[in-house]
Length: 493
Image (cartoon, rainbow, N blue to C red):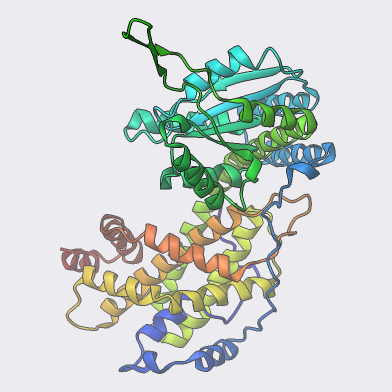
């Protein structure tokens, strides 16, 4: 994409060059600038702020008892909407065809009759035994058609274990009911996984297995501790103690001749509390369980399609960022007067906001683009990103004297680097937005953008990346002056 300088570039505002101007101020004046001085400078640049709209709530408040068919159909429609966008913007027809096939599969599951039950948990908690006991003693008696499966063990430290855990969570997410098995009080890993599954709106039952290994008085204490800890995310009735494979009981019999006979007698599995609760759930909630699982699958499909779409849009956005970072670098390098930098680079970054918003179909007016540019500039300054980046870049350049060229090079590199950080942060921010039917439906969140700025800056602070970036910018700024380029490269060491 070629930058069209006839675009309505916004004049004024807090651009990255303004931040550099503050950093290069005489003596310690930057430390004296307060909130009012900052906004006064913005006003002098000709920027008029818009009121920030409160971001829409995107987290779904999901209640199994309230799930309706319409809820699922809406989720499927949202997934189709993302795929429609992808079909317009992408060229990979195979990926689109596979996604559309998945839409058809999810849609047909709305009317399925068979229910799925999955058993998950760490190693040696009794998953396999429980599955076998349920298959032998319960499946044939239940009035519902139920499939039963066991996931790979969770919480295995090696690489194979991590892959298995990912597969286990995937299986769990597609089950209508998940039995999460533990054999004692909750560990931190088990607790975190429970929270993760609950956040994914999974229908959960927590099964405290091997209760027979505890003394009777201790069993109740452990069960109450588990119920107290899970209060708020699980119903009391969904936290159940069982013994899927209780230890054999030693039987001693005294004979009439005074001798004693001893033998081990196998115990019957104690799972009645679990099966009774399962029967209630499958009878009363079967339709909602099917809809809830289908809803989760539709949401996951939407996420998969959105990830592909974001990849396409990111590929289109990176060249835009690179062009603006070079324009920012040239503006800062060529204009030794800070005020000119303020006008030029501030305008460049506001236009970059517009161009990136257009790629992600987030409709911004000129005034809104100004507001975003101002917000990013102010956030960079307050978060200390300007000072950190310029100090690092200066250390690479190893400047010993402030000359026009040396100062211009530092300014140019810093402007390019911070422009890139701003652009990548916008990409990260826009990728999180909902794919709306109408362009620009999403409200702008200042706080979320600040979080993205800080995160992206931390990701791009690596010494190797910065050194390569500095060399690249030097080559762009001074391609026609071999002597200056050589001098700069010597300063890089």
